[in-house]
Image 1: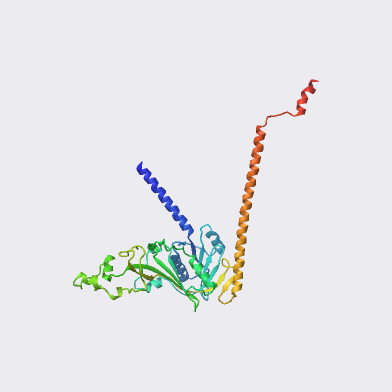
Image 2: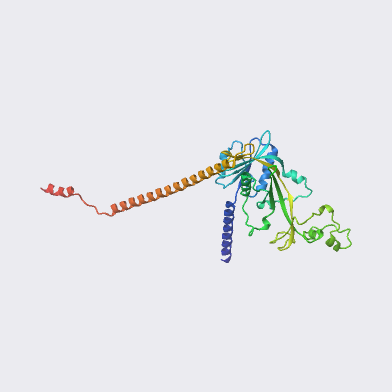
Length: 374
């Protein structure tokens, strides 16, 4: 009996945990990353690399055929609670990257000035850090230099922020921070630098030999007279293995992090290793809608701030009217249902009264026997 009760409790706990995870996952933004048009092999590989960046809140095995229209993709994305489309396309002149917010827009169109695939970035490094556990959680988004440079810059920052779940700095678990996505805006050239890094935290204040021993990676000690030489100076290690740390990456940990020596209230060094892909983007156009609608910003056609404000106010009015119509439709539906219920209750009462009343003869039928007797 105890085993059965314990197993039932465990099953109930697992079901509740799974339901909680599904609810938490449904509340997070999700994305589709795919190509449109005749994209080459490099663009298709760049699409796969972008899916790795957006994991785990993206469709990693998404397959979209040429005959599937954008409207069909939007219709499929609704039930799946997909909030963003990341679309890569290629023309004869350049490569373009579109970022769409579902279901009502806006759509940001970027020109990809330069890009490097994951394989190119990794091959340029002597040592890289990339494993599957890094992609179990979304990356940490870092926006740099997104200041008051115009409404389009503010809109870009908001779109990139909404791509990933929000973070509570007081409750966040640092063990889930395995990757970092850096987007740097250059106000002079009006270009964005897209960089993807892996995060590694190591303790400071110990020699490199001690760190190797903590990591269970025993270096060669054949040239040493005593083990103290290794612990004190790190002798016998090649200069290429050392990684310089300084004030730019040393911090005090607020909580323990997985790894030997990373204790709370102790100083550790945060090291970033680029894992790709790498892109240089320039905003070309901002549209009010999913791939269509009024152009709110264009890099070749400049509009005044008053005109852009008028477009935004018109969109806000349309959204308010749409919400009012939905509320009115819901109210009308409730009234119809209430009226239907009242009519059904009245019919039931009339039917029950007819069944409960005794049978009675009419006056003509009561006079017929007397007339016959006469």
